[in-house]
Length: 470
Ligand SMILES: Cc1cc2nc3c(=O)[nH]c(=O)nc-3n(C[C@H](O)[C@H](O)[C@H](O)COP(=O)(O)OP(=O)(O)OC[C@H]3O[C@@H](n4cnc5c(N)ncnc54)[C@H](O)[C@@H]3O)c2cc1C
Image (cartoon, rainbow, N blue to C red):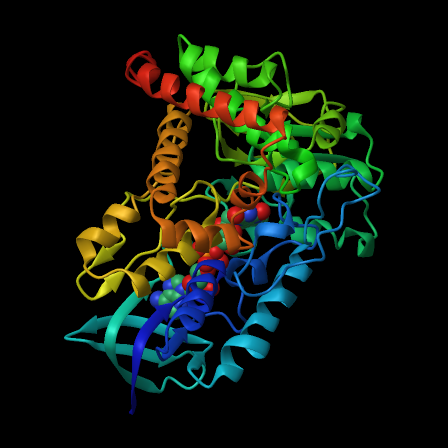
């Protein structure tokens, strides 16, 4: 059995683990060991479908010390005019670079890919190599970092939860891209699922030439979507991004019910929905451009009868009924849940750190802040006070809770000079740099900031009433 020591043992070399490791490395002289079952850094991005991309700008995704992309704006496609979005291949290439050009060359990081962490007792962690079965005993001098909290489900590694009759053609989004090899080309497509993967599959089908009439879409719940223009990091988008937050707070302040809130958010350009005739019941921070939504509106054949239970040769059996389907339909399984509901827990616990959201939905920003706080503040009570976990929304009212928690964290951080300065300098904080750069004579922008402040306070006053209406 191999045995060695480390200061921090990070479980997971996904975006969370790498972002935490990067900031920990830069801010301390600690030794770090990173363990992951995957063969490469990047976590779920290694299993993603070929047409996956970030849904937020690359400019503020990844780790703090290395730019992702070149802050260019797209000039063609459905994201034209907005900051670039890294493709899945670019994201995995980026995380490879983070590991091999930054973390490992520091001489203070050990990386154990294809290795399974199975537990820790009295600071002795057990890790097994997946290929050789060899056990390693790792003495953890400071903390275990559980960077597996989010671990999203993706189609390639999540088997379907419904039955499939013999002869039915069911593919993952990855296999969908390989149908050019098939001699028996499908005439009809049926997308199963209502999340971001399903939206990506629909955009891919339409841009690759499938006719809207050939597409059915099983949509158990419609989703509210963030309008990507509100997430842009450049100062030229100040009105959309910072002004957007002010409008979101105004909507929370003035709404009389949760549905009324989302209608206000839609009316003020914050949120989008694919089908304007249906009231969405889901919100998971899926982010789309107006161009993508316009494209998706070409699809008219929605099946809204709940979740699929069985795919028969010529019909779908769903939780709320049956639907006849055309022959030669290719079913695309996009039902992996993406975000698995897990209860929040304190980030800092004795001997253990569990990075979670500090500003929803920014996973990598949150992990970097968590590492910064671990290095620069003393006791766990104070660290947990600075790092108040923002719960991921499980339903529409969760948007209110998360937005207010985001704002409370922001106000608390703004009073902490050291942390505020680090955030302003951080590439992962898309917005702080923008507000810090405003000059005294930029009256329009100052007015937006004043609106944000006033609306934020009014939003706090209305939260109780709004949540009671949910
Ligand atoms: C298609 C898609 C697009 C997304 N786009 C964005 C976006 O634009 N912006 C954004 O902020 N977020 C986005 N997300 C959210 C996404 O969850 C995060 O960005 C991030 O990649 C999650 O990383 P993670 O490290 O938390 O989880 P993972 O990538 O799942 O990494 C966890 C790692 O832990 C390892 N692991 C688990 N258990 C063990 C064990 N016992 N032993 C060893 N290793 C273990 C796993 O092998 C895995 O590699 C997207 C998610 C999906 C699915």
